[in-house]
Image (cartoon, rainbow, N blue to C red; front, side):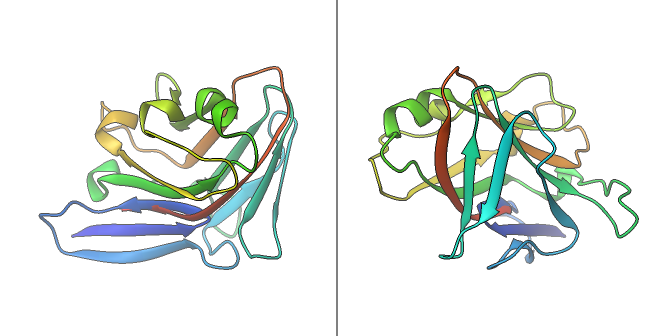
Length: 168
């Protein structure tokens, strides 16, 4: 059975269209267990905004990680064979061009981070854009992962909003 992991942080990991699916919420007005926000990364600060969405303030070269952890803070493995997509919504505030170019995304244990620009056509300032990324692209070797990472690959600080995050 393929599962949908919905991170209404605007991040959803989605199941394949050919399989029965169930939803596993990651973010719905708050992070849902087992997902935890890792604010111990490279100079970032993410908070749940009043909207409620995930407001991310990234320093230059900062990152944001969503970690899949149990109550004892042990990693919970996410099998890439259970999911087909990473979906999320992003609002770049007034920095659409910079965010599109400089925000990179990866799954833990993967060989490299991929730029948001690879998955988004147009992105407008102060507007929500839906992003739909095949896990076969983020995770071509099908390696088990425990976290989803966003990296500011620039020397500038950014603030942006994320919503409806899930693995489907």
